[in-house]
Length: 262
Image 1: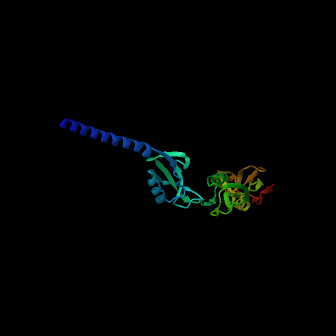
Image 2: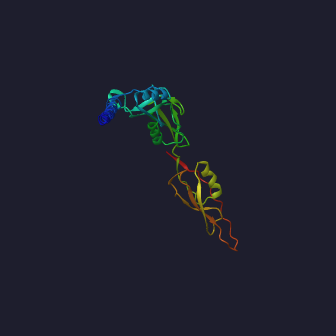
Image 3: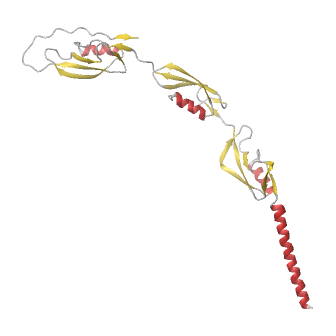
């Protein structure tokens, strides 16, 4: 009799364990393992989205280091999620939904292009989601972009056309090189400088019979084109040391100003 009761007791315990395991298995399979549509978290605050996911048994992960600009979703609310929401997008309980928050509308300003080349300016416009309109040029002593339309710093919408004004130094005047041979460098130099020309290199050479400071060679040569971009080189006389007293040379002719060419 006692043996039968013990066997019945063991059987009952085994039956109870089997029932418990079966219940847990089917609960996990049908409830916890059941797929459900991915919830739509777009536009929710982080707290609201977290509570909503918790009720569904879904884990919410907010990408704190990344935000997205949006004209429709207010700052600080969910603007993007993965997986995407929808009845055809299914997830299981315990799955993770990653979201990013809105940084609000993108504020675009026309960049400061001062001194930059036209190529750099057009490249920056593309990088700022703006559109290049056209280039205009103006003669100035500086180089590069000097203005923009709309002006730099103006808040504009995406793909706004922007025009650029570029400064280009004017071409220097070109002259016909005059004859400097036999003229004093001290009188020639100011005449040349008044026309924007400069004497860059001056070499001295002993030359018998000519007073000090007289130009005896020149470059460019007579009649060659010359401009402010090309310094003039001259060789100037220096009297040789001598004990004899000679007759002083006749005074040289007045310096000749260079002639402008078209």
